[in-house]
Length: 183
Image (cartoon, rainbow, N blue to C red; front, side, top):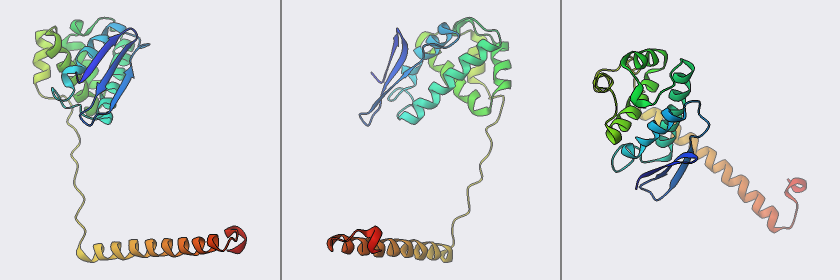
């Protein structure tokens, strides 16, 4: 199983394709029902069923889950994921970054894939356009040959200087002299 949800205490244990694993505790959040509901969708999002295949990605979604639970609770929401309405989610999505909106959409889609409990209007919004666009990133320009040559020369110089300093220290160690005193 790619991810296992334990309810007491609430936690998710991820097993990744490279053989590593990671467990995230979710107990202590202000709305335990919402936290558990969203956690129930994480196995549907974990490799091979979904895109969570590494610790960093799992940590990102766990962070998004925690933020979503805290922020919705602070806004007065006390129900589970099945109780979320279109207006509650739109208000939440308008208050967070485009990245948090995208992560919360994925979490809710995972919950719905596992339970089929989301409201039909909420499900329609998950399939629709994001309210906030992720910022466009302009890739950096490629180095020209002269810049590459300068970088290579500088790196080789640094490595050569470090190697020379290491050789001096190794000779001093062979002579039995303290490098701090002998130089």
